[in-house]
Length: 126
Image (cartoon, rainbow, N blue to C red; front, side):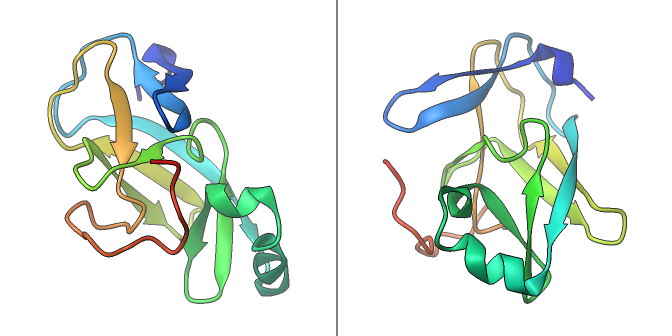
């Protein structure tokens, strides 16, 4: 896990994002983020809060808030990372899809599948 080489910075037009100050090889786990799993009821309430934009779907009716940098990765339809959910253990793994250069922003596809081009369920800043 390369958490010590990651940092938060401004991402043009997107607010904050996750970046790296080191070269990272493809297929590297860059973060293992524990999550806080919200109940079905709390997940419904979340839609009326700012946290709605930072949660992950967790099964069919629940959501989860990722700790660490997990909820700060920005969306891209051409992401350089993916995430895998480990529901039983309560973790998200963030993994590079290709080599990442120092200074590059790390992005994921919010639709889970890195190739999924479906519209998002909310409007992004860019």
